[in-house]
Length: 197
Image (tube, rainbow, N blue to C red):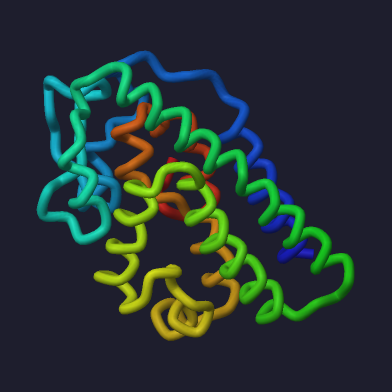
């Protein structure tokens, strides 16, 4: 019962993240500066549309610092792409629900949603070869291969298949901040245990 409640509340938090209203430029109800996990990949930038830009020293987002986060047109496009990516996570929720109903093991579910997460992350750059090259470069630097972390690598890092499932649904909060989506996705961060409310 406890596991069913977890998956239900996770799905609800994902829906809230995808459906909540937009954040005004430069203002957040939840201060990202108080979240070390979000801030590890970004820096304050008062000229940036949402007050933050990727940290050039970040292993995950450093390559995105070359873009002009002060340009409203660029940031609006990046925001739309990020929202499309978040919206695409519905397929992971569908996989999770279907496999739970079929009685698949937690390991099988973790492997499936991890693979889908990697597929979605790369598919988000369809038609954007430069962006795809950047994400593959980031994956290569972080994981040693271009496709993103394998389920086994995630298990070695986090120690349980349940956590692997949680992490598959975890977004990069720093990129959400730069794209003006931090407040919008805050309920998801709470549900995943990335922040405390």
